[in-house]
Image (tube, rainbow, N blue to C red; front, side, top):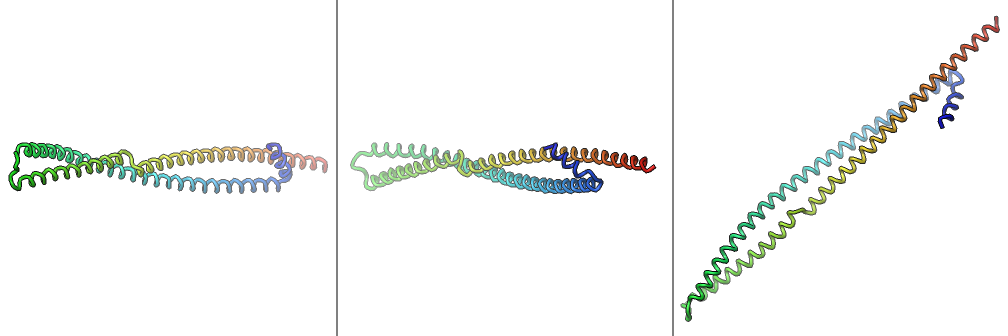
Length: 215
């Protein structure tokens, strides 16, 4: 491939006009490549800025989500403490009522039996409600550990980080390729200069020879 390029250059550079055309074409190609590189660099900058903006938004949402979950956990912990306190008080009340029933010998005083029965029913109803509250608290606590939305946000951040790394690798490969191309163009330009000097030397030698022959 290198030999073919040099051969083509030699064919084009047999005349000063060919040398000039080759230099113009080479300069044009370099300018086009530079414009393409500038466009690619701008595109890379825009993509990195977009990724940083989206990543910043995801981090903000994650912090808000974590903060909300921590507040919810505090409320649940407070509710759990209240529930435990109520359960203890209900157990004490229920024990006292049952002890009172055992102390009352039949016949039970008029109206007192119904009052005691109603109090026992009320304690059982409150106990049932507290059990439902306990199930709800346990469910909420399981949700607080790690919600689906929270997992999705973390997975999204990991995905964005991976894409950013891939983009950086592509950009690095592009810069490496451009540097290699630049070196190749510089070598071609040097070869062109060498051929141009050789051509000028040959033209000068021919002119000297013609001058000697004319004498």
